Image (cartoon, rainbow, N blue to C red):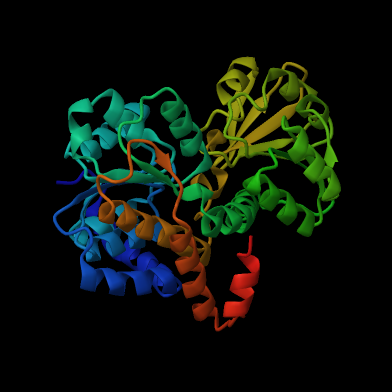
Length: 412
């Protein structure tokens, strides 16, 4: 019961998953716990996350806890066919392939949803929206779910405010052990991994424009600075703009930043961040990419209409000739540059993020029927558990409060 490209790719995918496993001690420890406790025994888990090696290992950890896994991707270009094949060969259900059309991608989502999941692991909100809009009869089966990314949380908050969310969703992205590390250090490194391997151009001495100064934007800007670039930040939030200034970056509107940028990275979760006015202001040879979840931040469709000519400039890079005679470039058609043009976040980073996912899913099952039908925060004890496990893995010890200190801090 799977839809994949080629099962013959399984051995290569297995090699990649084994490499990840060797660098994910948190998930290995949680797998050992789950094998004993079987928290998901008899439950169907639908997972829609970027389908690469780290995600595959999370799927196996959940399966070790008794879950019947139904797996699909969360982006047509981030699915790796060899990983999908390895999961299927290992007995899990997968509906995904690299380069799926919009219709194929949506059909893969439907296949993973119509089985009637009890637990949802979502990345961007596609599964949650699909089950609410097309399969409302299956909502009663759902114990709850976990959302991995900022974009998905934005969609969940909108649903919750409108009174449309019908089961509890844990905001995994807001957990400290997720956004403080995954969003900042993971995105910061993996975005530049993707840009560097795809362009083979130097960053030092260039002007880098980072759109959005949330945790992901902070990481991208930090790493650009470390690579020797001059960094410009664009923002709509005055407080985040102040942070960027005090962190040593220039801040200006995108239409102005467009005049000097060599590389542009959008990390906002919003649409039309770079559009016609900015395209026409760019200097010859400017390169754009997106590190937000959906391919709407760089307005590629508008760029295609504006351009007099388009061509494949290099693998995963498209060139556009503008009416003013300048040439600009877009990496991976404006999709997630760190996954569509790279391997995603480092394994050690995703070990923390997926540890939060696994333990949050366990929390939802243990507290079935007690959490209401709205968004919930990851419990502090889950965050603390992951942090304590990681410090043990790193061989680091910290102080603990004495009873007297606890009493002092809690005095009224």
